[in-house]
Length: 167
Image 1: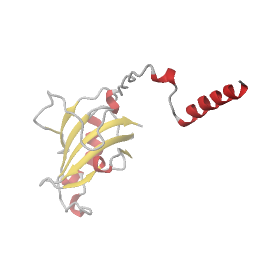
Image 2: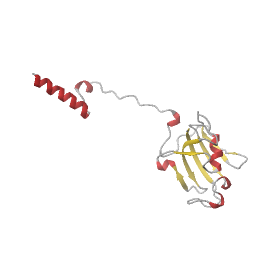
Image 3: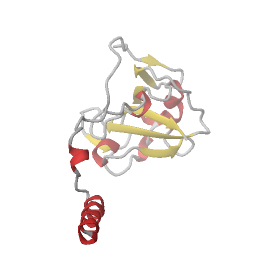
Image 4: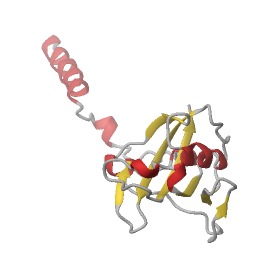
């Protein structure tokens, strides 16, 4: 009799260690509820997230020449030029050639707004955490006459940026 008890206990212990189910675990098999992440974290890793249905078609032009439009209103704070932010983005040239994309890398990027081109420093201050902005950055607010690898001199830069959070 003692051998039977020891054997049963061994089976129960081994089942739990190996992830096997006991009869009592099999009887109630309902799927757990799907967790819902906050909107600020519902950012795709491969493509920009959804735009607001009433997002403007026209760009706003600032005194510096930066053109922008808010594609999705966020609900959080707006960053200042001294902040570090975490964002997903896609950068293209006038002809649509993509020169950089955090979406393709599958991971958002963190950076200080003091260490990016002037068009980003200015433009990201218009969008709230959880929001998405489209930027059209003239050459003098981008890489200017020097360009950079993959970006010709005097290029206008186009970005879609989703501001995930201010760090």
